[in-house]
Image (cartoon, rainbow, N blue to C red; front, side, top):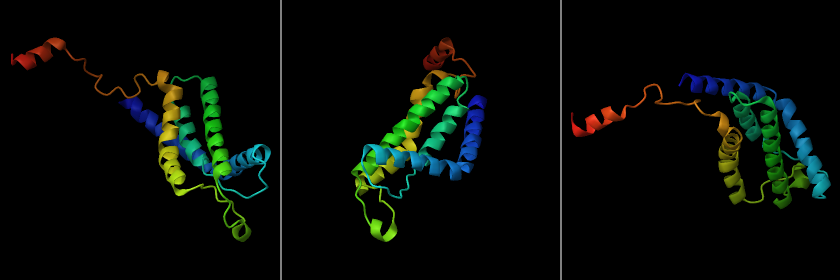
Length: 164
């Protein structure tokens, strides 16, 4: 359990450090999304706000805090995760409809309420966790070893069942 607590604290500290860098990371990520939108979707220049960085940061924190995972694998898995979120953001731009651009200068990136709520529920909370589990499942052995402190004795279990 001590390893699990250490992992959770390390994850929180890394996430806090990354969120502290968010003012510099967010514009850079938005520029990458905008570049793909302009290049591959033939969209006109627009101002947009995408919040996938808020999903990438927990994923990155989990990856960086994972013990025994080699740094090259962490970097590769982080790159794959960023690409997954980037594709989702670009697809959201593709299927969204512009609203109030003339009045606000902002492009609405929500195609409809269903997509928005599904993305908020699964994208924000579940996708970073699933990507991390896929990337690090080999390295999680012993991280949360609940109940492994005492080895069960099959003979004593039989005795308990039989009442001896």
